[in-house]
Amino acid sequence: MGRSQGIPKSVLLATRVTPRINEMVKLLAFREGLYVSEWIRQLIISELKSQDVLGRPLQAPTNSVLLLEKDI
Image (cartoon, rainbow, N blue to C red; front, side, top):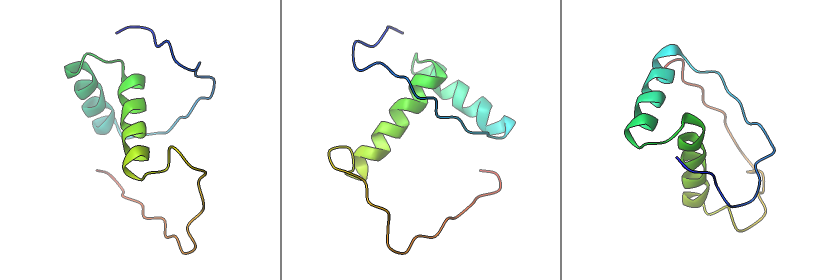
């Protein structure tokens, strides 16, 4: 688990999860040899790449719906 040589990270992005999700995330991060924060960062970056939004400005959808899941 080394230090990144890229752009310094200065913004904190936080969320709350259930204890079960917390344990699953810790386990998956450990299996990949990553800190939880780095594992989540890679997950976010992967999703942004799959949405093809990293290289261009974001635009709000014209008709969006927020779906919530009680507990995954």
